[in-house]
Amino acid sequence: MSGAPDSLRGSIVPLVTPFAEGAVDTAAFEAAVQRQVVEGSHGVVVTGTTGEPTSLTVGERADLYRRAVAVAGGRIAVVAATGTPNQDETVALTRAAQNAGVDAALVVCPAFVRPSQAGLVAHFTTVAAATDLPVLIYNIPGRSGVGVTAETVERVVAAAPSVVGVKHASNDLDLVTDLLLRLGEDFRLFCGLESYSYPFLAVGGAGLMSAVGNLFPTAVADLCEHVFADEHAAALALHRRLFRINEAVFFDTNPGPLKAMLAAAGAGSAEVRPPLVPLSDDTRERVLAALAASEAALAGA
Image (cartoon, rainbow, N blue to C red):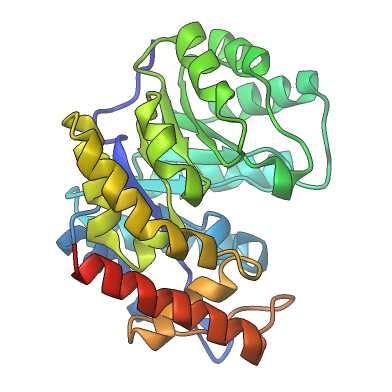
């Protein structure tokens, strides 16, 4: 059974980290948090994959945690992504997140290291023991090079009950049902693969951590609310209207396409930090065409 707070449910949007001439644009970041509050999101993730965490310093990440908590003011949940390939650094970031007053920590499987399943159990239980925060495991094998199994998550939760859920960014939808059968229907599973949003929720997911929420916060939150209200026809229709934009955010490495669309929509900067580079002209054209089509589809709903 999950001990997650009630706030950890629904659309918890992984925010981009805005840059201006190489520096973190803190004013734009704070405005982005406020926009999520105003437009109906249930929470934000700070320095998740979409926030370019590997290009940020520990100090920059901790500062963004504090700023998000201050702006959110308890109106929506703030989840701090604190994982790195280095365990000591992950623990330090998780403690910084706790000191900032966030609602939960999101800890990714250590990228590049490729630990065994036993190593993952040890890693997540060590991080969980270092904080009083609820902890979510971030399973993204395409980025990390390793993913958790259902058995591993079950072992982690048995050893560390403060681990209350998983963000699952993989097309292995069976893992959702497997974990809910093992750990109970209140175990919080969040979809991290945008094109699986509706099916993930339909089989019992607690919510979405969708990069598309940076562009269309209300629509992504509404998709969650429709499912929670058993309005599945409306949810499916909205899922289909969002599908092309769900694809477009991956026309190049995330968050490049997303930032290009935010810039075109007047809601952010296209700037990314190296080693990411701006989109090619062809890719940018494809991305903006998908944005225009999605805007039209949502406007005509």
